[in-house]
Amino acid sequence: MKPLKIALGTAYEQKTSCLKEVLDNLNIKAEIIPVEVKSGVSSQPLTSAETKKGSIKRAKDALKKVDMADLGLGIEIGYEQNSQGKYEIFCWVTIIDKKGNQISAQSYRFLLPKFHQEILKKNQYLGDHVRDYYKNSDDKIIQYLGEIIRNRKPFITNALHNALIHYLSKEEF
Image (cartoon, rainbow, N blue to C red; front, side, top):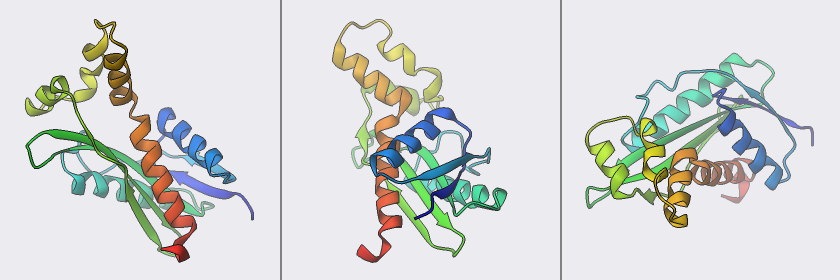
């Protein structure tokens, strides 16, 4: 099978490296072509629907921008209040190919610590404060929590795995 050409709807290096890691993990040969596109949603989506919409727009627009691509891929991180009114973090990934096939997959959700809850409830941008959570703590768990919320890698890689597996094995689902 020839390597896939993936138009990735972001030029953000962290998301590109997550995609490379997942492709390697799944033993998928691919050329990643990062392209800067807008999500069409707020910079901090606060619902699952808005987050998914952003991933779809990124995938569509990336595919439109790269003629030689086999598929467009959009990654969007979001937050949403659960039934107890507490915010959870998650990621949506969407894959759209030239035939119009579309697969969207969500990562697992993770309840944010109280520190992050307060920031979101004040309608402040979480990215401006994430380092404040763990910079004064020697607690290894607090540092780990702070790091996964800051870099969002576990959520991105989980959603990428879900989307790629479903897309590449459509007949199984």
